[in-house]
Image (cartoon, rainbow, N blue to C red; front, side, top):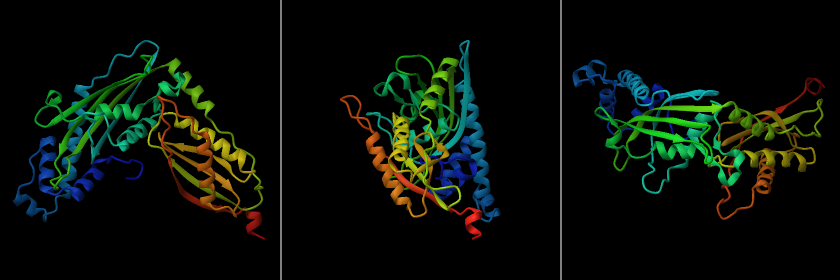
Length: 345
């Protein structure tokens, strides 16, 4: 799904996904039309469209997303903002094809938490709370919010015929700031496939309240994780390769420091063969780095060196803080650059 792992974004993409995955397209379209407040096409009207429901379904989805946003405005009004604090609002419509619920043991598919973290990351909102309290006190924000968001549809949280909502509330363990409130408004779309779950068409609304002190602490922590570009044996007048590596973690807790330490280590131990090219791209739990390497070095060698450095950077486990799982490392891109002075000879 590109940037996202577990959700479908924009009305056009939702229309495309539902039309490709619903066992009964007519039943799915009827459910969406009901939420949108319009009458689904009759057989005669569908025949007049040449049996093509695509245009009408996109219209239904678009209107349904407007309806969900209106309900979110009503159910999740803007909270009061304390003096000296700032408010950031995050709004997004999304379809969740497999909304595994947190009923019982609070376990949900990790992809749901990953995508919540990505949504927060692109708005500059931290993916962990309690950074200055030590790793054992950190909260993975995306995972904690997903556990609250993906509880089963409940009659106590029902609006109208078939719209539900799940509220969220999250603060660091030992503080009331920063905080995230709001929640998700949704309705289930029956896919009609044997053994399948209903997809959830939703609107997310988060309110992030943070103080100037929170901002200062976050800036200091991010600055401490900044990576200095190391020396390179490749001179500016010879060809070199740029290897882009993507590192995907299954959670946000403590991984930013591990990544920073690992990249610093690979530069220090590669005998000037591997150096980082800034900037990095970090979307929550996925870290993407470009490395400058000699043309004789392959990308698999860089990936292997980074894996070894990650192993060294992992903290020792403790009774109440298990090690994070090793991430998945992929080579995303490899380019060779030849300076004009070399190309012309």
